[in-house]
Image 1: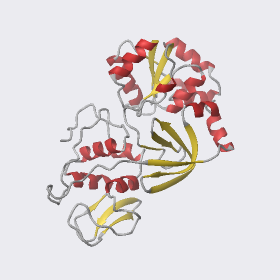
Image 2 (image 1 turned 30 degrees about the vertical axis):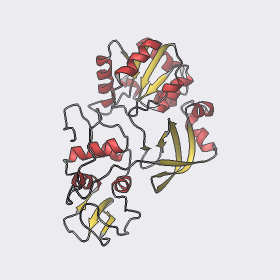
Image 3 (image 1 turned 180 degrees about the vertical axis):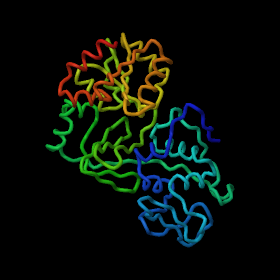
Image 4 (image 1 turned 45 degrees about the vertical axis):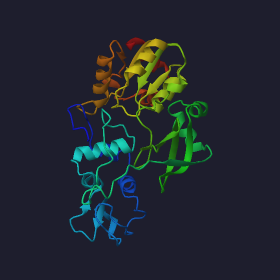
Length: 330
């Protein structure tokens, strides 16, 4: 059964839609769906004649079953209905299946549940594997202009498995963006489109730690930060760093134990979300430091109005001030 919600979970439909699109969700859970407006057979009721379409409605996508008037859902309501679960459990299922790692704890889901509206001994709603493929392109002037703001070189980008792409596929669906990059993490990919409507698409899981394989065996300091871009900024400064798949993901005990054995000091450098009353970045940083005392917490002071290491470097155009900040706080 799906784990019930608890007070430590922070997950919303808005968070999910900041990473993936409605069409991604419908494509994943409706394998018969190929194109907007084209009818296909329902998986959540007996349907021998194609009667379902994914349609646009007031800026959003809807699942519309013309053979069953009550079956009109947005993407989250569809998953909720298909799995016969509550809304928050539907969010956890999507978070889990897409490897978004937005929830503070990995949801435990069962994929042997019968589909809503059909007998469970006849039909099972099977988990579908998310496959991401990409089409690499040549490095261009616009790539140099983007990454040079953060003082990240092409050599470093290649070291961390980052390449520019012209388009990518999530399962059978093709997407393109003017400026997109594929981060190769193990055998998985994260797609980063800094100016896209959706910045991130991913099939990684919580076990994939960004920057871990680039860390030296021994050192003075290792920093746990919130993104691969920040990891690469720190790498350019000669400081080893890692990042979880999500800033809301608690690093595992074995990961922290290994880092403490390999480095004299381990610190956390998460976003200072000064414009958010709840400051989720620093809230999570405090939890990590408390759980794994005596980790140090590095934070950019509010007066700078800058959130993270890459923001700092882009604003000042140099590493010196950031280096001093890190030295003082560790």
